[in-house]
Length: 253
Image (cartoon, rainbow, N blue to C red; front, side, top):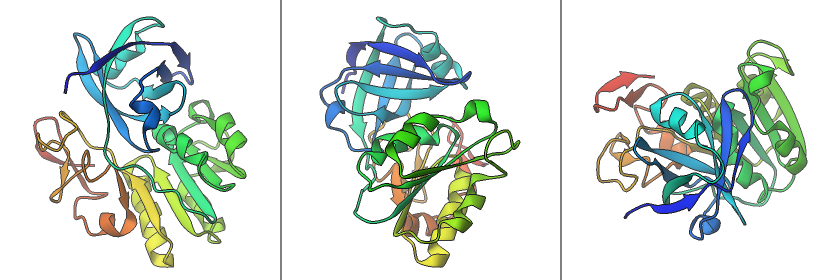
């Protein structure tokens, strides 16, 4: 499918490394929290991005860390991007107590989910206080927000997963962030019999399950994911251990 071309409605700087790009697309307005789109930067590249805003306007929140995302960061309001999707399976919200664990840019796809949960507890982590993403928005939507930073500049000094030890009274957990972090969250939930849903990131080219770039133990992150249950993830040998490079080579995380 060719991309749908849209002018950027607004560009918002979130941190020194993160920007949110707003556009208006009818199909994305009907997306599920956790679904992703393929974002085309004309003349540069096409990159997968989870939707961080779903509604009247939609948005993707992008960390500049490669040629495609750096080119996206250079765009301004009124300039055009292409959108394909939304694709994949998103988060499944359910009644009851929920804990949401986000690391770094992982807060972006979890933000639309917060609107469908009942006063969730949010555990928000980052390397340093200046990179805490969507903290104010999470405080507005959640019942409680607890913060952890690797350098101790805000909240708990240490990994955000250490905050889980005070969050056992929950019915389910949702998570997105670095895969090593999510592996700890999934293992924590499995040991306690608490259902976990996690949004997995892999290199993608087509977004349709054709190119095999995002394959993980016979599944495709773009088609069967990007959101998987903890039970599925624990059955995958590569989860938390291996990913594939753009050439398809298996490399350690």
